[in-house]
Image (tube, rainbow, N blue to C red; front, side, top):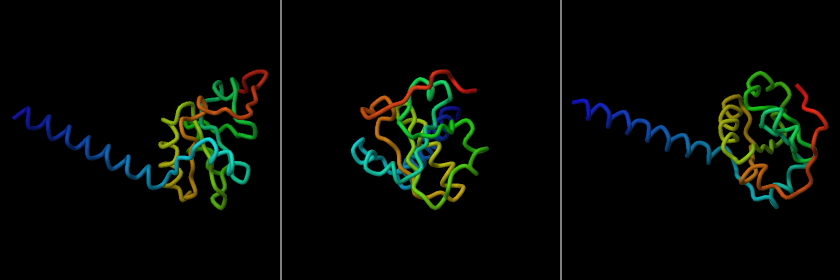
Length: 130
């Protein structure tokens, strides 16, 4: 009996994970560095890493809106322009995309591999801004 319950829970988690993955793929387009570079200047470029990570280096022109603050800072993001996002390695961006999509944002893109795969121009802050 306990094994059946455990298997049911695992199956439910698997179904939920597959559903979430499919939803992410539908609402968030992953771009190569070249594709990202071609479009981000005509979009809102948002670094969703924490402030300390952003201060250590970020893509030139990016605004820092950490994932942990995103829900409270939605007013800073326009719905009528594409949103190009990145995190350190691409794992946090899908969570940001799901939140944004629920709030009515639709034109969402992420940098494949995140900031650590970026080879373009970067800027470092002299001191972290808190």
